[in-house]
Amino acid sequence: MNRKKTAALIIIAIAGALYSLNIREGQIGHVNDDAYYINAARWFAGVQSEQKQLSSRSLGFSLLLAPVARASGEYLLPFRLVPLLFALASLWMVWLIFRKMASPAVCFSVLLLVAFNHLNLIFSTMVMSEEAYLFFSLLALWVFIRRENKRFSYVWSLLQALTLAALSYIRPEGFLLAFSVFAVLLIWRRYRDALYSVFFFILLILPLVTNSFGIGSSLNKYVNELLFPVFYAGLWTVIKTGFIYFLTEISAVAFFTDVISSRMGFFELPAALIVAVVIVSGILSRLTKKGSKMSFRPVAALFALYLVLYTAFHMIWPAKGARFVIPILSFIYYFFFSAIERWYAVGIFGRFRKKAFGVASSSAAGATVTALILMMFAYQNYLILITPVPPLFPETFAYVKDSSKQGDVFVSESAERFFLKTGIKTASPPAYLTADDFYHFILSAGVTRAAFCGLPRLSTKYREFPTMSSAGIKRYAVYLQNAQRFEKEYENKDEGTVIYRLNQTYAANFQKAYEMMIGALNDIKEGKKVEVEKKLIKALDLCPSLTKASDNLLRIYIDLGRGDEAAALINKIEQARRASHITLFLAGELCEKAGKKDRAAGYYRRCANEALKIGDHSILKAAQERLTMCLSGQASVIDN
Image 1: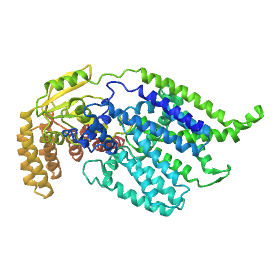
Image 2: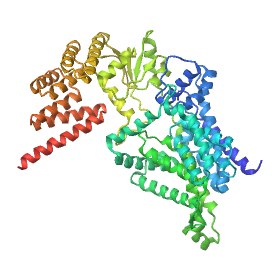
Image 3: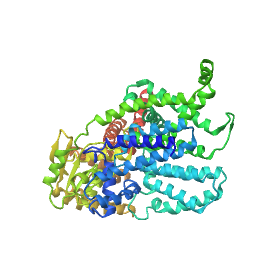
Image 4: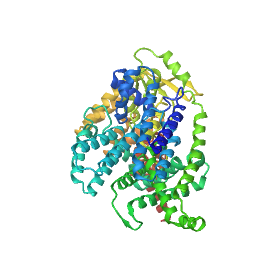
């Protein structure tokens, strides 16, 4: 064993010892994601059969955890060892890949900074998919490198497809690396390799794309999540916000750490731009030959294309988080230190060194920068290790266990975490249904109690535009305030939790009225407006607070030009304080048709405020547009 390999193994061993220090009691369940993976793995392993909620995330990582779930039973520690092993295996893959791609100085800089990055310290012991995704992405790249100087082989094509398919089952970003590999093979004119790799890959990921087994996330789900903020804020706003966010996140994670970034203030964005310029320079240096002409270097081109596509994807992907930088850390460092190596050898710094000392030592420059970054990482890691893990709602979960009866079913904004901690079946609230549809959904699911814990999900960071997750949580919190439907039975202000019980008397009348309303809505499609009106009125007699029925009845009155009846219905709804944001929008529309711009503007303003509370951004935008039209119409009247 040569000294370089020995040094790499020592670095990996020290990193493993550091990671193991972060295995502490009570860390599982603080986010919804790790609870989801454990519950799904236990369901696959046959350990639990209550909680079959497997559609919110990709199932690749849960399938990897299934053997552990089968062997460990109720113990959670073995689950935490899986990402730790993936993290250490990833470090070994970093060594295998970059020892051939870069000088020893750059290779060890990449290995050291990936190994001791504070995010790897955190996620190497969290039951999350980040480390597994990192390992399989590096494994796919290693397979590509091994193919570089080989002739076509069915075995290598299948192996390439297998690694890329495994990556895609773990996280949707796997498709980005797959596209990058196929694109580079085509540009490289390895047409046969590309054709068979694509063929095998499509066969392997077809069940994922079509959701053939009906137990996982389909491609359609990811497309809907991606487009949700775009439809609300517009593509340009999403790109601009995502660009600034992800750019600063890359510099914070890869170089400055959270402690320093939080104190940079105005200088955070300029520093991030400088880092980006250095990385781009490193990409160009690896794609040029002798500093002049562009040349095609397949592996470097693959690294660069994947880095660019991954970064661009997360600039528009609605979920934000530092953890998304983990899979590209090695490429960031590779191109960053390649740029330093190039600049120091032939640039301004190199000329200065030659004049002053007669030699240009790029290795010394890279080592100095690496040492500075490692010192920042050491302080951040120290803070992580000394920060105690806060208890996760111990009093609330104890109350739930003690007070629950057989047959109780909960609904919670963090259903997987709630089930993991209590063992009681828990439903997830639909992300974007109306209050009535939501209530009908949970009644149909047999829900008897509701919980709101208010802890934000790891995958969502609220920025200038919404996500499906943030909109769903906002609506859920508002819907629980309906005292007719939910009776508060327990509140813990210290832990920020509330437990509700469903009003079963109200629920019985609601279900009858809701079914009658659904029949009326089906009649609308057939044009039976007289029957529709009768059914909606009867549904409102059974359950006057069924706002979806009153809104549809109001819509019919407005469409038929029955303004007096529509106005009377609006007054009745407002007196009972049952107006929904859609009711207010329709009231504004009625006033606008009657030429009452002032009253219409008032209704649209109230509608926008209510829509904002529950995260209904389509109605919010429509109300804002109508409000602007009303106000501009008033201004033109005054001018005349």
